[in-house]
Amino acid sequence: MIQNNLRFDLLTLELFVAVVEEQSIAQAAEKKHIAVSAVSRRISDLEAMLQVDLLRRYQKGIEPTPAGHALLEHAHIILGNVAQLEADLLGYKQGLRGHIRLFVNTSATLESLVDELNRFLTANPHIQIEIEEGISPDIIRAIADNRADIGIFGGNILAPELSTFPYREDRLVVIVPAAHPLAVRASLKFADLLDYEFVSLEKGSSIDTLCVRAAAELGRQLRLRIRVSGFDAIFRMVGARMGVGVVPLEIIAPRLNDTGLVAVTLDESWTKRPLVLGVRDPTSLPPATRLLLNHLCQSGQS
Image (tube, rainbow, N blue to C red; front, side, top):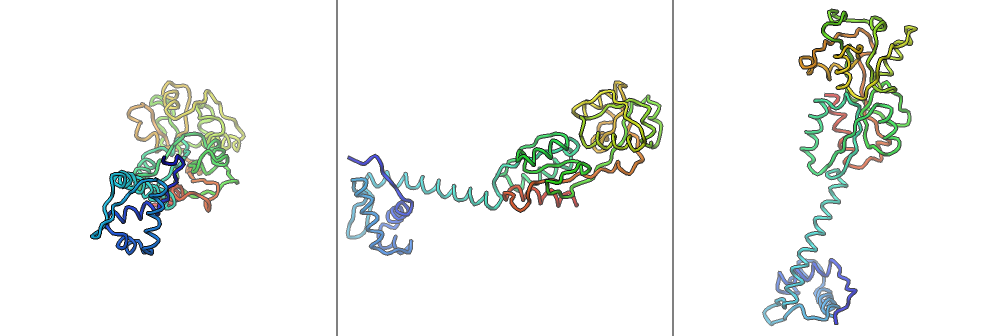
């Protein structure tokens, strides 16, 4: 009776396949750079373990028995799977495979980032990227808590526990309905807005922080009408004349014709807002994550 606790080793299976393919123990030994006696012993031990003859030995060569044919078929499958496993693990080591959690603030998920990720995934088809949107403080916390691998967030939000790298710069503008008194202005100072009610993003977001700080420096407070969780909601609320909004030009520019809104230049130095890439420790990143970080850094500088 064949044992139930059979233990196959890969080298023996490789040698068995080589013996069948070469039809000779001596030629298989030469091919695998191992002593003939060692190959012969391994085949004999394999037959003893299985309690079945695997090879028929003739003066002119060797051929497999029916049991040998069955083992040969399974050995090809096993060795093929092992080879694929080795290739996959090597791919992870080299950064060719992997799963990356990318957290981004809403203004970063635009055409530039889409194009950058498309180029990256085309060059690295076995890497998966999971994207989650959020406000900058939440993204920073997600990276620090190891819930995100890379984050893209407003550079005006402090993140001392992270390593950050320059990414891009966006420009903030004011949006108002076409019939609004400010719509005819070529440019505005932030002080010009403070008599109007605001539609703003969530408290603590990068843009909200900039606006609150700018108002405080003028000795004023924002007249906040409503907070929303995304730019589409800001567009709708501003379009419904519920207040003015401050948004990235890159987001609103393609939608001006559809929203009926007007974008007015905001003449303040802080409206040129840096976006940064953040990670916990760049020296300990998995290869795939390091590849994406380098790709985004290079793309942002181009």
